[in-house]
Image (cartoon, rainbow, N blue to C red):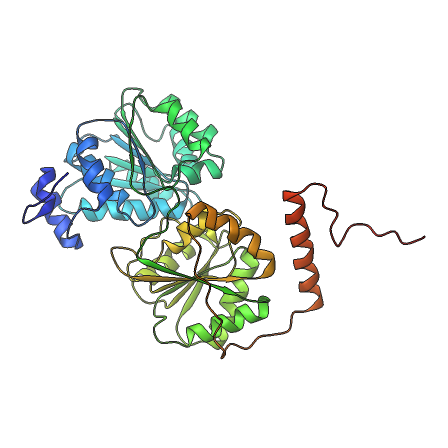
Length: 419
């Protein structure tokens, strides 16, 4: 689709309220997914959109939806957007409210982890667009809090993560209770077999829009890989990096809650600049407040497990640090996609021990490129690997070898103690 207008958004024949909101939000021109998806969604087609994080897919379905619904009407929802996590649902609702700011549309976010009172109060005032996690949606629907007979548009966002989190059963229940005559839109960063099966179950003759090869990192992100011998040296490396002024807004990803907490405590104690940590043991309000503070620039560092690898749209994240390599390989793309957003340059740094090289090899196969290996700066103090950590890494390497070769006995195979 060729767009040559003074305001390229006018090509989509959006109303003035939306055009003004787009301008206020600073969106200069449509991204590729927006150029391809908006006309097709506006025409009422079912769509499968496969686009990496940070490409503007949220606005690609929100703008046609807002154009279609236009203004507040009645008290029951006319569109439903489902997301896998509380964080993503909050993010999507915020995005919808930004684009709908010049309308009277009522957008309500439903998610668990908090009491439903505030959400019930909002629903009592009427709703046009529901943004929800599957669990909270079904919980309130079964209590007859709202009707679903007016829903004409259904969006599944981050469908691949929904499948990873085991939402298939809940989604089938939702498909059964909402009207069958509706427009269905499925958006996902990747398209594994489980998502393909889901799409076959509820999409009839969809138009498939694939913007980049599956699991391809953004070209705006400069990737770097450093071989680091052990946990203590990783901590020393974080200390070194955060003393560099250019690391102005940083997300650090850890594999476990324990690791995330330890990184957070170290930074809070040793490094200048505010820091918070989010993971599944943190209360919902605590997590949302930390994300908002990070967005507003009040936090320099946000430490997280993969609970927040997706769905956090923060412009000007200068760096992502993968303290640990993710076990779910697609999460590598989602983690580093937190930087390099909205056409900004970004930098993603990954620490790799010997026991994590196995995972990096598989990530590189998925993303279709070798991550450039850099030398660790001489200023970083290299700590000695403890006996316990060396044993743990050796056992993990043995486990990996057995995955590739079931006959492999390994260094920790039961020894023949007696001749």
